[in-house]
Image: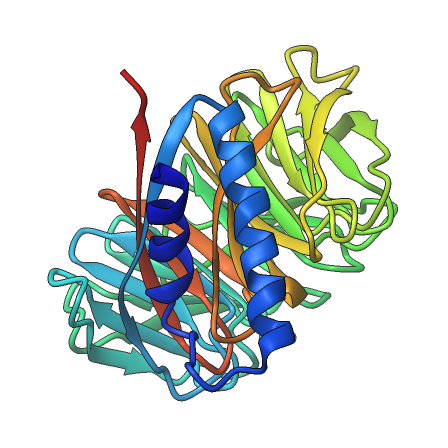
Length: 345
């Protein structure tokens, strides 16, 4: 009986569901959801509360999102940085924006500033202390194309495509200064900083581990050659979770940063582009599958998908905050979902 209830919830309440879809489409969807339910049962769940909450259609192509307090900051491609009030997730409202030069690909919020990776316009520093009136206060024109940025300890670590990892001193946000760099062998597309190391998703060169204990002299200490292009990375505990394009989500043990070793993986149906880890779950933006995939990582050696939700457009970026999952879904803008796993007694 519970199978029928779960099926009805996942499919019939889906915002993209239309009664006039052809029968073969409905049959395909039913098959996909029956597989989902079977997997979930094995994982020790009766169902997963997968619910669409709200959305805001930004004017550009939403590429990245960062949530801080009551606001979602969206890197919106050619439309720059958009500031969305998400205090009521069912009714997101734009309260401010800044039209960055270049193409806003990703964003990181720290200390009242938004650090925007703006493609060939480099790193832009936007004062967002007044979210209704974002103002650029500084910038650094990196030598490559900025794809991602992570801020830690007074430095911005920039994934700068063919120019590798750039380390920018932002102690004075009005005057960012490069203090060091490491030219990775591939194209640096994503970066995460943890415990004195920068973990770089380096496209065809996989995951690179860079010692940044001396920011002026970053040095590579280890790497793992992922089976497909490494687009993004998130580090939690002893593991690096890599969004590896058509190779899905790869789980790399980095307890010894000099010798990263893959211990598990989950092959998403599309091309994994972004990843965020919260608690026991990894949330993956699965680009051309146009979906958000939720994977149980409580056993990193055996990841199990426990839910998914089809996004209305390509899924580029994902962020989890306060029980909600925020997805940057290109021309569909910002999508907000709520996931609540329900365990059997």
